[in-house]
Length: 324
Image (cartoon, rainbow, N blue to C red; front, side, top):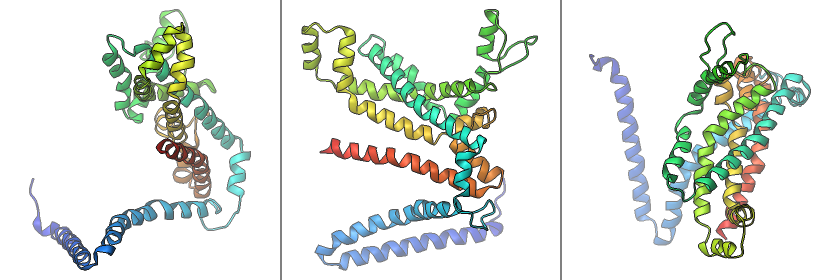
């Protein structure tokens, strides 16, 4: 493949100019730091290190957040001020209410199911002979992207009419026991539950690893004392194990709640939000980029931020308390 230097010369010149400008800036900073008094060098170092991060934070987060908030009070073409009309649409129109309801179902079920499955699995495989293999198997789905997992599970739920051979694993099992194939992803409200299964399948490995590490951190003296007192396995779990790993359980619940609120890939890949399966992130994309309703999309984005913010604040407080 031939490389045309003449055609690429402007780009190469721009690259050299950028490198030269970077070297000049670095040289100036080093000279200023070297000539500054010793007492001020710490402040200069801190400013140099923090300034790029603060600048990028402002460009990539603060300014877009302010602009999105303003757009949420404007019409779809961003030309007219409509006040709270977009938020009123969100809580009054049936299609928008369905989106909020689905998001609530996801946020309630996914963290609980992921944490429960991970906790039970961690307890069952703890200190067993094949513990490492068992953990590796449950953690494998974490290596798959949400889009990849969605494609895999679309084949699991694939449907064909009864007179055709089934390519979907679930319908093949149904037919094998004498049942009729079902359109699993097209029948609300159960299709949302089938999508939730995919999320639980992916995230259970994360919960297992975190909670298993917490279980191994329980002091042996506490476990031995409980056994000497005659505690049954069930009592050991609820009175010793669970209270001892409470912090890890909270971390998993909070992490999964934030991830679930931002969920987009699975719904987009498997149903596209059709058949009453859409969630806030998917509907935000549809309104802003497919339907040209920038105001409604921005309102959904602001509402999503409001939902995530309390969870983030709670997590920050928990970390501060743990650090103390």
